Length: 141
Length: 106
Image (cartoon, rainbow over all chains, first blue to last red; front, side, top):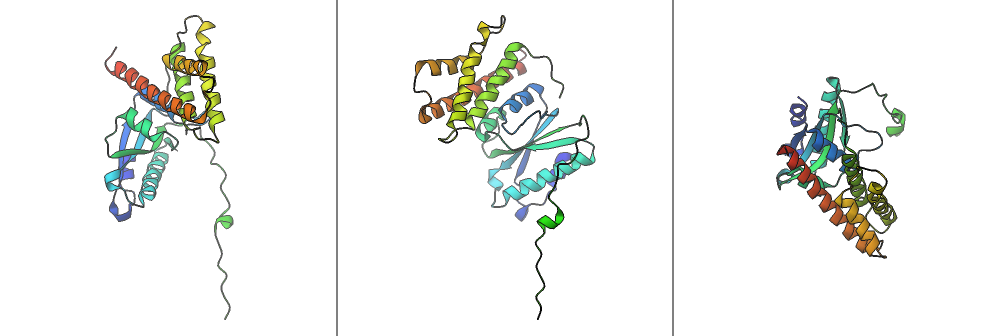
């Protein structure tokens, strides 16, 4: 269901540059956790890890936006299902590519850890709406 | 994720891979002190089996220890970068080997 939502994400030129690998092997997740420098503090990984890959044959100048949209679909769908999910972007791409045995044309772009949350976590603070909106004054005459 | 109880050596391997991957993110002239400290930590950990009975250590930590003890200029940017990249390759091979052993049921 998460990946179904991801594949319906908007994509520039309908390039759909994404491909996904679902990892559920405990030991593999444990190894990935230790080498992903983006796993900070006491962050726990869920029982499932989704590796979002870019298919370089379908890459465009807007691939970053496409992958971000697919990620957002995964996160929102996970939230709607009562799942906890978090994106992880800090890792050695070449190392991960080799460890997972990914095909030549795929590059790991993001990981998403998915599981059932132990507790509800309050949302982090956000900048106020008036801080992020630029006002254009109406000119007189 | 429910984690089964690890052995001391599995836990040491986890720390080792954490240190190597962190050191690789500290390459470059401005960040080398961070990478150097992480390699020094590996050297310290390589001596842990002398203090903890039953702990065997691992080949990656031994490699770090040998590197530090055989070259007094190990912290030079070029040498350290080369070494950390070699360690990262060795870690990758070790992880692949362990995962393959597990999938073969050995």
